[in-house]
Image 1 (tube, rainbow, N blue to C red):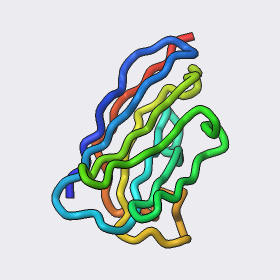
Image 2: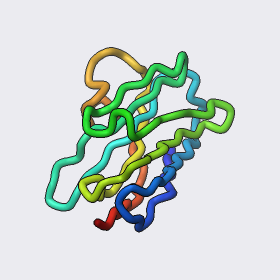
Image 3: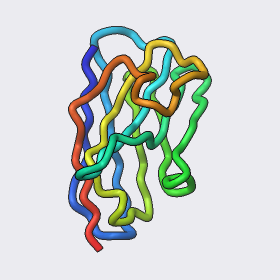
Image 4: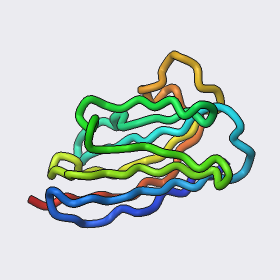
Length: 125
């Protein structure tokens, strides 16, 4: 399984950015895809998750109302639309996949089986 994240860049505060994650290697008929981020000197933290079946979503409180996660099952792709970006959103953003979307560890790194390489988002003030 390979996950390829893209779409990062340098933007000003208040701007929008869309991240993409393409999954390949095996069909994803179940499970879920998530986005995490890691700022410099910080631990990796949960951002958002969406289930492949049913599209159930969850968000970190810090991004609710600003970020939207979506998926394209036909393309095995997941997107993270980020709006009203803040300097504190600056981080490397990682997409991750879990084979079974069960209740536990949905917002924890331990709950994911595969990880992409990350894409850097820098928000200037």
